[in-house]
Amino acid sequence: MERTLIIVKPDAVQRGLTGEIIKRFEARGLKIIGLKLLQVDRALAEKHYDVHRERPFFAALVEYITSAPVVVMALEGSDAIAAARATIGATTPSEAAPGSIRGDLGLEIGRNLVHGSDSVENGELEVANFFSAGELLSGWARAVDGWVFEYQTP
Ligand code: DAT
Ligand code: MG
Image (cartoon, rainbow, N blue to C red):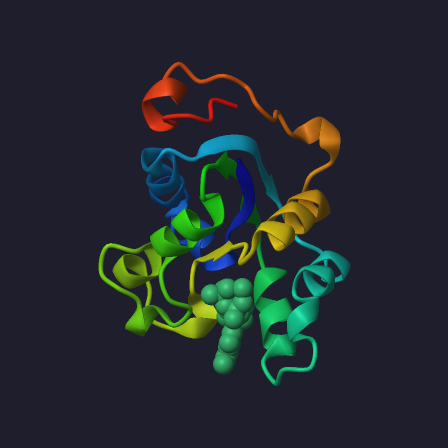
């Protein structure tokens, strides 16, 4: 089972799209193992986006993610990284496929609604950056697990 960190970004929370976005990951079959509302501080934002530190948009990115509350989720599932990124869609919403979150709900790269981890390694690291061990319920059994996961019941 892979883990991915999903952030419902400030624009999505402000637009009242939190439920719509969570619904899509739930319907996909991914299992919520952590969920909370928080306001990201500068230190956490800079850590989360450290890979982009030298990019020209870094300051705006940190400003955006710290500007208002976000909802963060840790999700678990087979191929969770690829599945979640497909559900999220391309980085630039105007180019994202219809049916994806960004393709259905957004237009601009600086207001692209949602974050999802891009590798198995980063999924583990990002979940640990946003959640303490005590805030995660890993491996809890859902009634539907055997109908979502053919072989790997967590
Ligand atoms: P993603 O969020 O699809 O994983 P990323 O990791 O490449 O995309 O970039 C992280 C965020 O940084 C992205 O959601 C929006 C912002 N960003 C990326 N490239 C950008 C660019 N060329 N101009 C402005 N913002 C950008
Ligand atoms: Mg990324």
